[in-house]
Length: 358
Image (cartoon, rainbow, N blue to C red; front, top):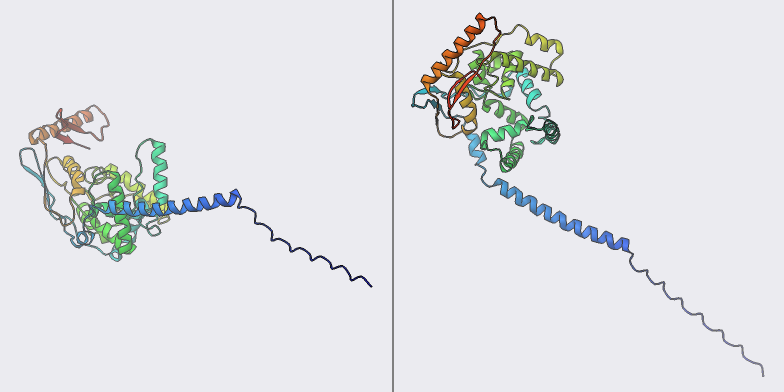
């Protein structure tokens, strides 16, 4: 009997390959993503909280924009004698299209060249200012945009604190959201303080040049733009030489920004005299300008009239003016070139009793 063939053994089924355990690299990536997500959430929460905290104490921005009138400012000597009254020196509200191009160019070239490209805050300008301040070891440049300056002038206090600076940025962003660039520039030019109790370029042009802002020439526009840095120091009535030097700097800025050629800037600076009008007061004109600049940030749109009682002693002020006049006469007789002079009388507590020059 034939033997039956021996059955072949079935091949064993192959076991599926076992998965290798997750390596440390994948585990680290998951951990990083988890912590990054958590950090992002907390950053958003912190940013929202900071925004709410900074916004606390901000004025009603819509209401502040409605009123154009600035309150009257009255300055009194120590005995109550009125030495200056500013009145409503706001001038006409001038539309941007009615102002000469060189006036806007002078302001933009000096105050904010990237005005039409930034979002209210200029990171490039802030970085440059920070580097310059660190190198100088003191504050030599602020880095604030025109929008930030408008925010400070219209809505905020002059306090130099981190909170106030953050509020300034918040208001600047709000202004950029609510208004066009041309509207912001129009508000700025019509509200900014320019010295001698004047607010806005039209009031300043009428005060210093006896003409409306729409008719100022290139040199006069440079003088007005130069006042923005320090209205009292560069007042063309009280300090014509300083005003002229500052105007030349502004003209140089206009050349650098591409608004003027060097030839036209030189022509503008030559042979054109600032129209010197009467000083704001016969008594202590430098003192008055100093006080007006000091209180300008407190004179807010829609606010109450302001009475500033000072420590000025009128009798001592007259003696100081007489003494300075005699000193200049003596210098002339001695062939000494004394172009400028200053005298300040202070009490031991720091109160100003007399001020001549500045």
